[in-house]
Amino acid sequence: MRKAEREVVGIENFYNIALNGDVIILAFNNGDYPYILPVNYGCELKNNNLYFYFHGALEGSKYAYIYDNAKLSFEIDCNHELIVKYDKGYCTMAYDSIIGKGVLRELKNYDEIYNALDILVKHHHKDDGFKFNPAAISRTRVFEIKARSITGKSKK
Image (spheres, helix red, strand yellow):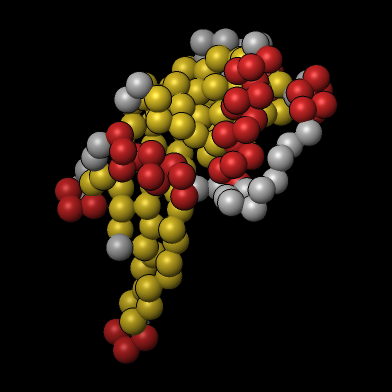
């Protein structure tokens, strides 16, 4: 990293950044060009590993790239704040971000799916009491990404 003072280290710090994001950008290998997929997500820190969960419809073109053991890259950025110094004609952006690599797995077990969807919902419905309807499980595919490597950066 060019500016070492901006480097974020440690799984807890990566997790805290992930908790503040809204969208995870996934990149799959597609031969000549990567296949980019922005999705909302939920995350959890389990056994000192960071896991991300996302869901989708039962079918779609993305499933050409989404399959068990697919390797992917991901990115989350959050806490954006434009910093402007009008007198100097200078502006920059404060942010936190993580970039990493992971392996994907489709969840098939009802309890795993329910838990993943509950984590996802809680990520986006912080303390508002929203509960998803379990009837949606039969028409939803749910995936887990286990992060294998992560780097982080923060500019305040």
